[in-house]
Length: 239
Picture 1: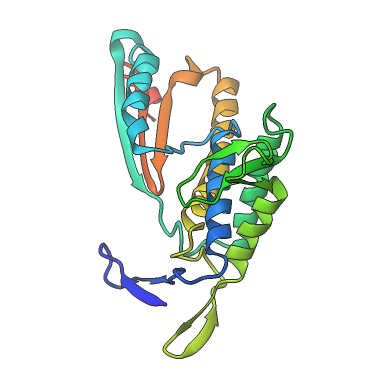
Picture 2: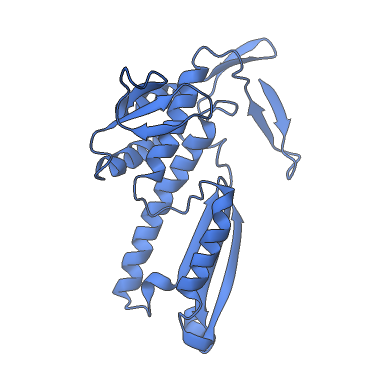
């Protein structure tokens, strides 16, 4: 393992483990791509931005949705944040609960009912709903259960050596693993869905003006950006 000093805080280090020769590297990569695909097709109310190229269309859509929330009196508060300890301090049990939640959400969709994916072996290859067959030799079939089990193995069996001592990582996702980013994003996406659902219900119970058009957020990995609309005439709306 290598210890990478955090640029923004010299008192913190991040352990990074090389998976270059790991025997499960390909399986972990396939499961990571599959989990990302499941998240994208699970209809979650999350803020996940899957590609940087999608940011501009999102911002244009936000403007169309929010610019006249309070007519000419509409103003915006911008929100920028960084998700702290997104990788290093996540409890394994909570990560697995988040993965289960996302898989269950995808199973409830029309295309996710089959519970199976076909995945290419290539590192950046495609993932599709369905099963591999003789006409598609470049694909391998993974069930949703397979994806969950592979991710669980990756998270809970991270052993490495440092200074000649073998240790096991008991907290956080394995940095260096092909699955670390997808797993951490899944944890955030599940939490964001619960937050967005509770906010939606709360605003409707409060009979908020145009409750579905008061805020928008997006998160790329651990960087969060959002806009909140308010009425410049009403201090209450700013609160």
